[in-house]
Length: 112
Image (cartoon, rainbow, N blue to C red; front, side):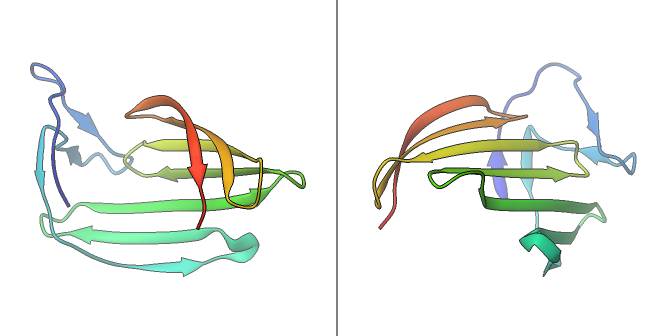
């Protein structure tokens, strides 16, 4: 994982384990596994090279109705995501998404 994002002056985040969350500049190597739980929820566990542990739960493409799908993600870094997708045709849909880091978004989804 390699990213750069400016958070602000002396702003520090911690995860559920009290470990420091470096979001301004991050260069990390991780080792982990993913396990599919009942209801097709994915559980992911990762240990980064600096000892930080991250656990997450994620499910995509939850059928709400014939044309409406939902998804979610939560993790121990206190990040979360929720999404809704409306299927217009077999290959085109409208999607809305909320992410704790990036905020709200709307767009078109093209499936091939």
